[in-house]
Image (cartoon, rainbow, N blue to C red; front, top):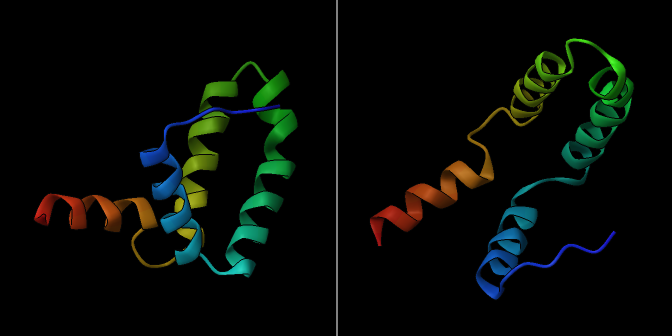
Length: 76
């Protein structure tokens, strides 16, 4: 799968990626993989997606990188 994005989006993704530790990325991937079937084949797929996204936000105890980045952008 190829995803195309603009230069601004790419730079923001780079910034976000540098704020995460490898263990947090691995934990996020493991959670997504474990929930993949539930999100795909369940009648409550949307609910499982919401639950999974909430759990992903809890993997990193601090603010998520995109939240920090938004605040910094607003200050400029």
